[in-house]
Image 1 (cartoon, rainbow, N blue to C red):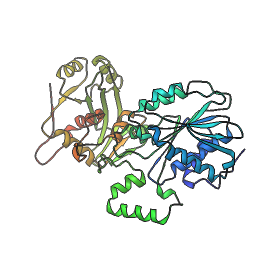
Image 2: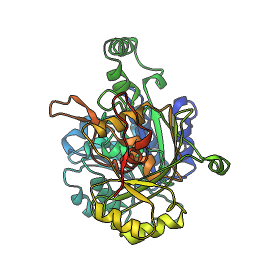
Image 3: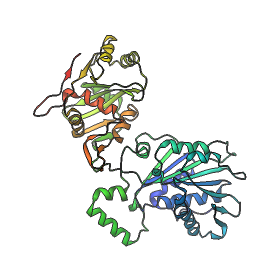
Image 4: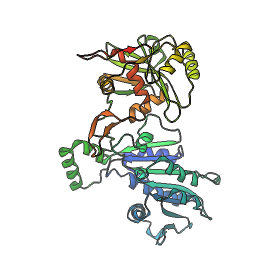
Amino acid sequence: MIIETKNIVLKSFYDFWRAYRENRYTFYILKGGRNSAKSTTASERFILDMIEEPINGLCIRKVDRTLQESVYEQLKEAIMFFDLQEKFSYSHSPLKITYLPRGNYILFRGADDPLKLKSIKTADFPIARVWIEELTEFKTEEEIQTIVDSILRAQLPEKLQYKFIYTYNPPRRKQHWVNKKYESQIIPDNTYVHSSSYIDNPYLPQQTLDEIENVKVANFKKYEWNYLGKVTGGGIVPFDNLIFRTILNDELKSFDNIRQGLDWGYASDPFAFVKMHYDKTRRKLYFIDEIYGTKLSNRFVADEIKKRKCEATLTIADSAEPKSIDELKSLGVKIVGAKKGEGSVEYGEKWLDDLTEIIIDPKRTPNVAREFESIDYEVDRDGNQKPKLEDKNNHTIDCARYGCESDMQSKNKVVSATVY
């Protein structure tokens, strides 16, 4: 049974439906603001899968008591939209929707303990479709990975494919694991990400639109987060001067104002080294290269720096490890320790934020891209924003502060390096 979908698909979701039909991905991420029709679209696609494929489906939310009044009713609404009520049956204990002509069905499970899903099996048809609604209810990515691993256990019959749909409203905080994974310049090849907002939904009633407009006037940041699906952080976005693009080899040849910074780390905290070009006239900072990882010995780091022909250019490092600085120096790396003072962290972050552009090539420096785009400001226990970035996942940002220390000037001081 094939249903014609060209007249039911919202224009803003054309690309999603096309990618889904072409079986190009395993994971389909539908994120956006309220009233954007992402859950409606997911439910319609899910019902069509049950009709078109000899497979079972599984719908998941973090808490099982939320299933009936959300995804279960959403799927029933999709069935009614297609006018297929006579083709499906419904069960409430347990929750289950069955496609009668074939006998395949959709199960519903809470994931309060994701490990419980390891034992889920169906005999007649494989579970090849999974919809996780409100992805942000899960506190860690590991919880989701446990679910994925539980499903991707068996080889599917020929021509069948596993597909996962995740729907959610982006969390406000940039450091939330969901934002770090899907609000990124670096998306895995098996993952499709779609963004939408209420503006893409032409079927909203006027009263809803009026209320959205009221919120827009009263609190624009709340409007951006709730209805446009933007990650606004604590209200002010750090580094709104980021430019993500390819840095061409011809550009590299013209870069002659090189800056290098280094942040120590070993086990749980990664080591980071970055190479930059600073265009003083235009106040643009280009990230050219990086070394990044855990358990990197000083000798290995020195070899990597030499391999990149960076050993003769001055590197400014975190001064917290003078013995490591001396060791790199003995290994042939030109290196000094950064001069730290009261307010130097906040001052360096502000200097970076005040640049005209920070240009990052995600292929050349993927960890720089990840850290700069996901960093957010610290907040106090009442949720009020502090004038300082969060002190986590900021190793390449610290590198940039150290490397550009001599370029940072204020009326009262010049930040400089201290040689060991």
